[in-house]
Image 1: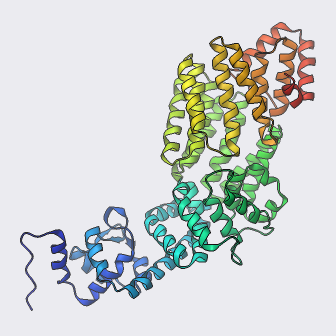
Image 2: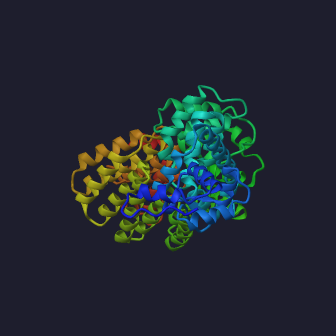
Image 3: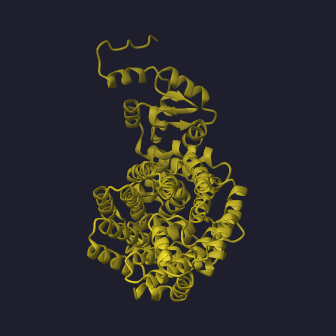
Length: 536
């Protein structure tokens, strides 16, 4: 039989139709089945394993090679994809009942893949597995959309398995709508045996701190008193509702004897000690966490532990050491392609540079952080970066630029427990800007607003310490200023060495007071703490 002649002048579809006639029955069948995969060409394609499993064809290598030779497939780096025009044509040839079966097989394969990958994202194999999931992103999303509509309980399993991948790569915000659709499909209570997965779906569906879905997820997680199958749930829970949850005794049961979970528990306890104004104990816990995460090989955990160790080196005035720790953390965050962690670390680095007097370098880091955070819709990170840019401008003498950045920070600040501390610091920046420009009454008003915001609970102690330091600069009497500095030191656990906003105030007060008088007033502030700030 003579093969049909290629069309002379024809549309691309006509070329595809002509090429279709050159395929035998087995090739046509596989070409049709391959349309269940999402990506082709530059956008992805399927691996050999996926083709064999989803299409139900054993040893499909020869058929795939033949389709590639006939330009029906693009074969590159072990993946097989179709151009969209070819894919659309082949999809038209698939009967509805065959397509439904293929979609079920496709979803089942990607559910298995995600659940296989999930525990490996927290150890030494995390980089290749993150890369694998990134390459499969379109198909993972397609599988999840199918399960939301066809098998919501399996959808809960897939969303749960992907949640940490999304968090690391800054993708969670793009899945809010799908998470809400899945939650609605499942109903108001968790299916049997899927309480953890149900709560994770709720956390993925949240966009604000007053969301009813957050209340529901929090209620479910607060009743789990067993070791979690997905220990990163504790991280997402704490980020959503606030760090107080890490004090719950159930959290110890939830992390159980899992090595990664134990390192995570040390992080949570480290923050509790930090909020309580015990930096020495806090630093020891973060050092323990770093050791645990190093043993696991988890870059996310190492980056977050190094971040806090860098903070304490900075507080002691060890700026070079702080930068070493933060730069190591940045290496891990960039290896993970984790934009939120990278943005946080760039802001930390910028703060250290500001305290070293390197204002222009600090501004570069804050600007990079803002760009990264903006790209993933992380409004709280954008606000934090603009606050840093405001400080950089103010300390460099650019008061107009400082005000513009602080106002941008207020506009973009997210609505969450974390935004309270951000807002306190932005108010303090605006107050210090006003003070530098000679508007003392305006400065006092900003400081009062900051003080009012920072008296809400244990997690606000660090912000309250900063308020006390700002008020010290405006104290009518030097003894009162020393008392406020003593309160700040007690709230944080120390004064920050060579802080450009505080150290000049401390030096001025020490010059005005006799050593014994300063000491007595300072110790009074340490004893009174919150009361000293409220009465100022």
